[in-house]
Image (cartoon, rainbow, N blue to C red; front, top):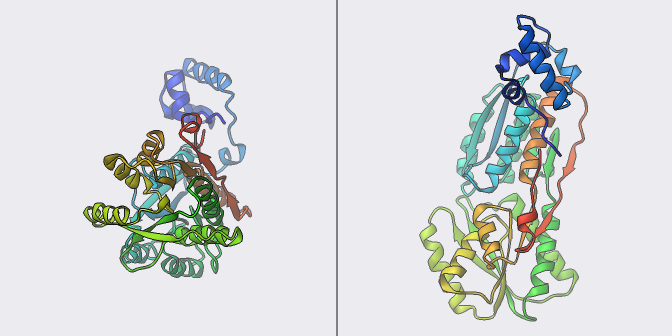
Length: 353
């Protein structure tokens, strides 16, 4: 899908300012004939079609949207979510939206609680939530519902809540697929390693819970009796990871494969590369920089992609349109799951605007 031309794109092509383009689009005068002609030629060239509903609105209103997700690191999963949100804001650049971004440490439930406590004090028009800790998020959403503030989930959803909408992949099915893939490539009867994040507050991530259930349900359904061995890892004390991985792989000689239910599989791929381990299969989630590197180098067999940019884009687009029109929106929205290999990764594009 080709990205819609933005006002600043049209301005650059026509050699005028964004303000000039805006005045022409909304018939506000004070524009030279040469500038109008240049802009109109560009509009025709790019087949620009203004949103007549938005064009007729008063643009004086400023909307306040809170975005809360785990911390953002360039090249990582949540960076893609925020990139999609930013693209949606660019699509609606003539709507005045002020975004307040509040991130938390996804491995620390107390960090999440502190951020959520700040959010409930904000007089927001809407909130976009990337949830990790279920109980903390449930407390936040109940307070938002009491105040009549709409909220949208991105990346995950949960029961006992009433979001305006959610945009997520099917995490249960993701775990189910990972079980199917890993058991199809490891030697019969070999053990399977499973990542186990060490978190402050000892509350598992919502997505990991769902993926683990799908994984175990597949094994039970197919009557597969491979032993599952947990591999701990810490985001707080990364120096421990090397020790833990060495202890695990030096003592567990019957491990045929490992599954990482979060986006940190590249960490294990790096360990395999440093130690020349090529006989243990690895499956991970998300197309992060380190994961894609591990896939290309052959240390990761499969990556499951879940269109994070698309999720972020649709979440913000839906929120903006709801704030403007107050029309009902589709609540349940699942993006696709993509299975990527070393051979297909270079042909894959997560989301085209």
